[in-house]
Length: 109
Image 1 (tube, one colour):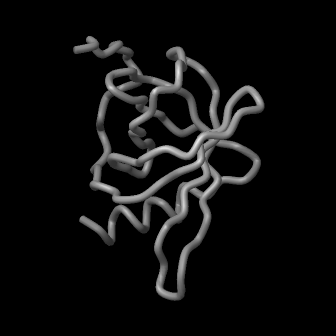
Image 2 (cartoon, rainbow, N blue to C red):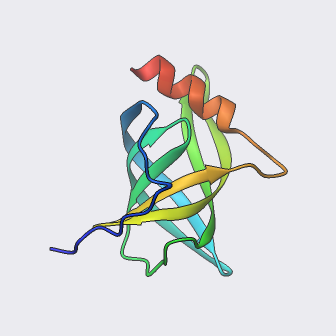
Image 3 (cartoon, rainbow, N blue to C red):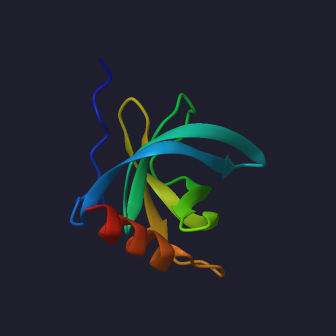
C-alpha cells in the first residue's frame, strides 16, 4: 500500500461529505474523468491513477446536483495529498464557484 504524502496544507479543517459521481480533472492540457470520493467547501479527494505531484496546479469541473438538474462548478486547486488518489485543496481563481460547493456540502451533512 502506498504511503500518503503529508503536507501542512492537508489539515482537514472542513466538514466533508461522501460524493457519488465523477469530476473532470484537467492539468497540462490533459482532461481525465475521475471518481469523486468526498468533497468539502475547500477541497476534494479523487480516486485516480494520474501521476500528479504535491503542489501541482489543476482545475476540476464538478457537476453538482441541484433542484432542476446539475450545475457545473469550475474549481481551481492544487494537489496536497497522494494516497490511492489525490487530495486537492482549492485556490481562488477568476471564476470561483466554491460558494456553490459549500452550499451543497452544508445541505448534504
